[in-house]
Length: 283
Image (tube, rainbow, N blue to C red; front, side, top):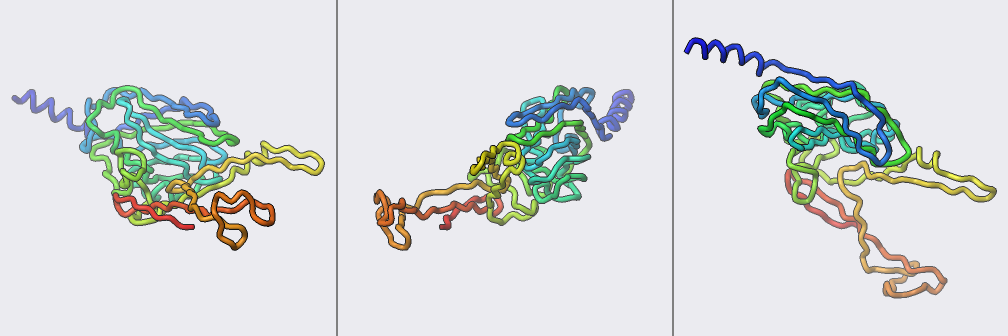
């Protein structure tokens, strides 16, 4: 009995002490590609949960347009947590940027690049603390979703600790934001639970600069318009058509002045109220 008690006392400090694992095996962040960088973890308890689990993930990377990229943590059992989803707009880099559910810098989606400090991620890190065995290969994945900008992944670390912070209810680990999963949708300030989930369409200045041709009398431009906002851009027809200020049937081939009829469009706006998603249309 004494021997068993002594063994238990020696085991407690191992599980209670925070342990950080770091990988410096980086690489290029390539356009329209997801690159995953592995780290092998061993020597931990064979189960992570709310008592002991992942408490923080830190990354270092350079990128010339942060709003183009997604950063994800992938656990050995395949569970994926989105740490940052198209945040930072046209500004650059994640330098010593950490993600934790008690991040003192607030939600990553309301932060300003270049990111430095500790932020609440887009998804709850505790999604990986799901009773799985943490010993194995973890991956930090970076997806560059828009061509024209580039970056380099430098390093990342994962910290395991007792009683990992359980978050503020801002995010939900069960999957991406959707009409049926409103708890996973985040308001622009990273804190509110009642807001419109507006899109934010932006133009890629780098594509315009890199992919254009100039000839006498003609300038040809390319462009990419990623949505870096909080909800989708949805446009629908209204079946209400016009020639100037005169209402006409949408089947009208041409207006009296020879132009085509114009149709009023409707934009769908999604609204989050805690976990409930509703929508309405505006012209």
